[in-house]
Image (cartoon, rainbow, N blue to C red):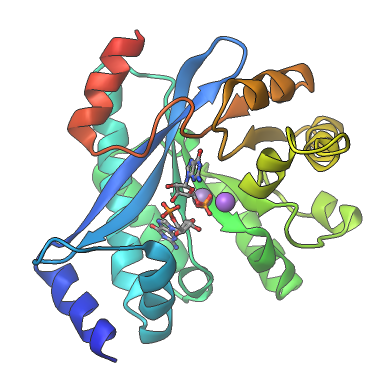
Length: 254
Ligand code: G
Ligand code: G
Ligand code: MN
Ligand code: NA
């Protein structure tokens, strides 16, 4: 309850901010997009992890306003990036289950796009695999309506749930994100790459984009590339960054 109050006032006081982690084309080794990630630094300088405060934002309902603000911030940043010449750049935004079920989610999405001028075809929403498995009928309907706005959908933490392949085929999603745990395993054992390999193959068979997350070293990147994984994200390439750092990083990459 105390953290809920602190989060509410912290959000009002502007203690929350969004950082952006670049996503890379593994072959060309160039940035093609970014994931927006929420951060909270309290007035006394303490960082609180989203793993701790997002659940609180969810059960208190604060996630509705916070999530809308994250989406708008990310859309706004996408527009700025395009103005700076990054015209093929995509922007991914995490969406919580609570937001997704909210009756005004689609209206919120449409007005965020309209009011920021962000082109929907460069905006992606990340839903988790566990979300994808609850209430399939609602989900299928929602995904169809989101598709209609032009925004694409990625399944985050893919491989950690147990969605069946036939179910996945029915979902209108565009991208699978290989969970960090499976990327870490790649170099840890002889069969360590089997899940990553399976997801990459699955993506190819279903015509979906695939991105590996949590890539921390060159060996992981090389193996992923050799397995045909087109995209990657992780500390090897860049950490999540505030916008000024992101622009500097992009200039250095160019
Ligand atoms: O960035 P970091 O690894 O600390 O994020 C921890 C978790 O918080 C991740 O699972 C990430 O998806 C989630 N997260 C980060 N930003 C957001 C956000 O804006 N909305 C939601 N719903 N989850 C987020
Ligand atoms: O669940 P989700 O994929 O949204 O979480 C993304 C989180 O993973 C971000 O909070 C980010 O800080 C973290 N992250 C991104 N790249 C790496 C990495 O290479 N290693 C580790 N350990 N964490 C990472
Ligand atoms: Mn994510
Ligand atoms: Na993830």
